[in-house]
Length: 434
Ligand SMILES: *Cc1c(COP(=O)(O)O)cnc(C)c1O
Image (cartoon, rainbow, N blue to C red):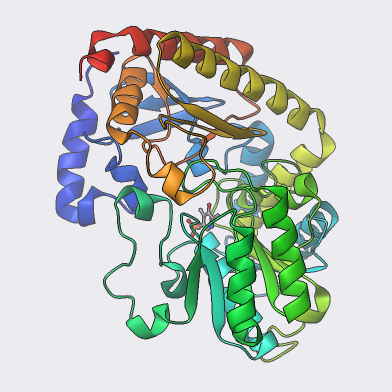
């Protein structure tokens, strides 16, 4: 790997212009130390930085790039949309097309509203659940991240987990008091919360497969409690599928798990790499959104024609080629096996979690099932693993508490190279010394 002098120079200037030098905190490498790499371009499964170094990319823009970077069909669709006009603030036929694709793909979604970010989707879904039920309390789970919505920034995962910000300054105590935080995978805890507050609970929001404390898989008892208790007490079950939607299967985690939530939030893949997200679900609930109903939610750029075109092209490509998911499963399983084998050979205590093409290698002593078990992971060791891989041309998530993503553009050779690089890192003096 060559010099990163140009990256360093750009980042030095960026720190004077933007807080921490970035426009989103996870990019600042707080979870692994050192300075972020500044990128010039991406193609397929590979990224090239400003200094001309090339990396196999497992961040995929934190999820959206399931087809790889600059996929020809997506690039063409964006170009054609730009030429027709970038924003009208009025209905377009393309919005119908994307809504139809989403409704056909996601089992529980009957109506949908397009927004601009995952944060906006979860914020809007929470407001809708409260407006629909006339109740105030929201249940969320420790280590789950739902964007930077005030009421959901309590015990949040993602960069909030990485940076150790359980409660952000600026979130009022009043906002926090209507949010109950429970442990993930704790069915008895959920039952106790409903027993105590059942008639005040508007919604339970959950990552049906967690990505934002690293990948964590739900247990069957927890899933049954989520669906059963919300139904019995008239609360809205919200699956936050911003990460898992169109990722773990075309129909998202709800298709894999066989559980239908009342509302679903989507982002990342649904926008094909442009700023677009969505929330949707039962028609009787969605009809409460303005102007069909009274729950306010609006957006100047919502359903933006360029972003919508990128989403349509991405979903069409995925929908027309189910073999993409079969291949993602095969190469992701191979990567997980290879990483486990390398870690075992090096005598490292670890635990690997995977659903489809999202996975996490935890340097943790026991299986990771919730935030307390995730938080035992050795983050310093993860940092040495991350930098060892960077030196060998592999760009992994820059935090122990973020899932890695395999894309359809990763070749068998990319996967084998990554496994070999990890094995080399585990044996290197830089990794074993500390
Ligand atoms: C990324 C993410 C969000 C936030 O989406 P943004 O587009 O970053 O606002 C919300 N929920 C989950 C599960 C996510 O992974």
